[in-house]
Length: 130
Image (cartoon, rainbow, N blue to C red):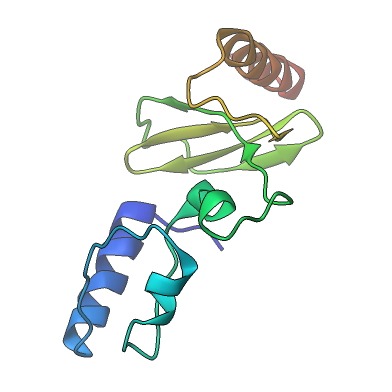
């Protein structure tokens, strides 16, 4: 199943509000602060901050890098191969990607950008695309 993330997430948020949900942004310094919350359901959006908050040294990032090309409505197919994947969305064509364990960097890696673009160019060349 393929989705348009910005459309899908907006619809989920709308449904959440219609059902009476509310979003409260809070900063927590300890697990005890979380335990004192009266809410029966909490969505944990701390991401890698959970490592410190819960003192969980087994938690580590898996960094992925994607490249997004300009939208091309005529591209109405997708593929997955050993060297990458491609799928179109309204906001661009997503080319992927990488899967790097324990990589804490938040910056794009230029060598990975080159590798992703060259890898997809080779896939398209082998498929006979111009």
